[in-house]
Image 1 (cartoon, rainbow, N blue to C red):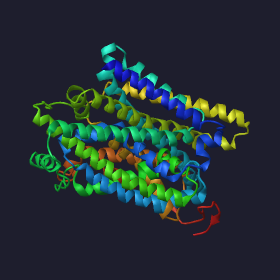
Image 2: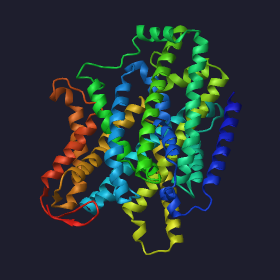
Image 3: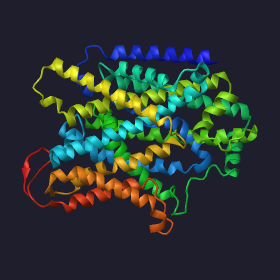
Length: 494
């Protein structure tokens, strides 16, 4: 079976390069960064499903049902609220200013220090988050295919990163938008195929399966203990702000939206994407329940098994060749869909936020060469993070990723909130990077000792909100009323 899976991987890779060739013809620097702002909104909406889900959702969400039941759905409810805020608050701002990097807004509003601080925090967060998502894909392929052939993990990671690097090298975000459409299709197909196969093997109707899940306690959605990290209000509010920051204030996700022709199309994209995403997450949770029912009915011992391994273990060892093929294709698609946009977005952020490539007095050809050097450098760091983390993987990656996001996206949230909802001017701009570091440090201390300090209270994903609030308050402390620049960069007295 390993030969079949490896052959399938090669065929899939060839298909990717065909799509890359078709989308990279007549590509320019503008194509790389903005897709020439000609992407159809429905293509972006559908493709963003794969980019949002990633290999972590593909494996961790079904597996995590074993420990947290269906409480993840409260996060999904929060996602909906967050996407509405993005569609009607953030997207109008980004389109009004005609931004390439969304962090350019903070430069206009608060100065260069805020601009670079937000972009650096984004770069760190995206490098960590997307590398961990990609690692999960490589981890599973390694265990079930490449370890048998004595191929080391670092080599598997190197090959996959090179593939992504090559197909995004010329036309960047334009290729990513269309590639995500292909990869979303494979991901969702794999999900449906797995559900159908399990139903066939269980020989149970939907009501019978659902009743079995309920009796086993797998379908609990609302955790009502306020001290728990997955308390439903924490999840809903945390999910909303995770979405606002990890999508609406994230260059990777917003760069895809900004390739739409106009604001109206971008909003259509966001609303359509939201509806599809809710349904797909429901399917992933249902799959998690199905896997647990299947394990129970067939005497499969999951005791002590990492939750990330439940889905692949059952698929490869019990569901047959067809299910294994579908799983590998879906997982690889999820991994590529997450990583390709990240490489492009990080390259864009470094070019526009850090070195300000448009202001450099060099030729267009030199700008292309510089952009490609940055692209390769980002891919190299991406690879190193995957290799280093492979020695420390011991819990559900979805928890790790959201925890990292709580610390790194919090300062970005605080910066945007200060810029958008106040008219104040920062007195000492040089302090902005310092405050953005102080805030996550304070949050770490609060999280570590929260049960002692707050009568057993345990922080969940709402730590992101606390982080943003601390950043916001610290900025208020070093600000004053006075002249500022409005959204168009014009002087305005307040």
